[in-house]
Image: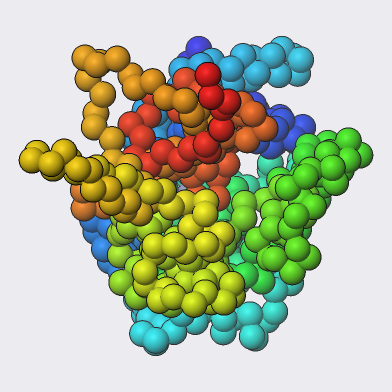
Length: 97
Length: 348
Ligand SMILES: [Zn+2]
Ligand SMILES: [Zn+2]
Ligand SMILES: [Zn+2]
Ligand SMILES: [Zn+2]
């Protein structure tokens, strides 16, 4: 698939996900799974460490986001990614996209 | 010509964001509420359609990258490529609503703002949105169903709780929310000044101080006649539950006479069991009901507690986050403080 077509596809998918409310459902599911997997705890700990290191008066949201994002992505368990992927695939089939 | 934005700091003593406070004073919260109800937490497919088509960066047409809506005009910009920032620079506006959760960003403060009033609005609409999608209430507090109600009522422990004992009445009120014992914490801070504040403290030291504070409290109430700093022979509820007697016998080598002393103790430090000796046999059985764990280093860290309830259900308490846990998770932790109930067995 060429680049523009892929981008179009993604945009349509995003629209469908929002319109149907499926995005909210997926977000709630993801939130639950990450809590269960201890992901939230671990990230919160890490965030506290960063804040302490830089000092609460000096740190900005951007610092925090930059430092946390790679770790946050890496820590999502494969099983959670798989479950979400399945759900999205199923949704796309139902929507006949 | 570019407008040079003048960044205005709040007065150093001001808590929160003075810019948002000022705007609220002038214009109220209606525009915020409109953004939330139509672009963050929608309640119908029609509204969500509009949301999907509008929540797009006016400059780069991206729909990801944290889209913010300007609170002072109609403009959408992404945060990732700083297109919302360039809008603020060009227009003199400075407050944006992030469209995933409804957080408010202040350009002058260069930070997100916690505002109780706005957060209540966000919650209200998030609740409505979840309901409209048939999802559970994201902020619901638990209400016991009929069977749980019976269980609560017939709980023998509950009957012994007096109506005005706050911890007990809240604990058994049936609300399924994290319980914050702020009054107890305050009481401890008032009596053990070195524990007050935000410094890191040791859980064991805190536990011992807590017992001491409670002992002094109950000692007064039970009309104790001896010096409260003397833990011997105290009959208060705290000492009856938590104080043990450590008996040491000294045998005289010459006359073989035995002198016995009994010292109070509140905890036993354990050697790390290396597996060489057989575990001690005892006539008593102890029932593990809580494990306090420390995560992090010596300078600072975080405590997480596993608690056992209803026979064998474990719960992991990590600040306000309480999740189910299983026994193998508990046994695989390092364990800093272990709490046991004594089960008295019949002598063999
Ligand atoms: Zn501000
Ligand atoms: Zn604007
Ligand atoms: Zn953009
Ligand atoms: Zn006592």
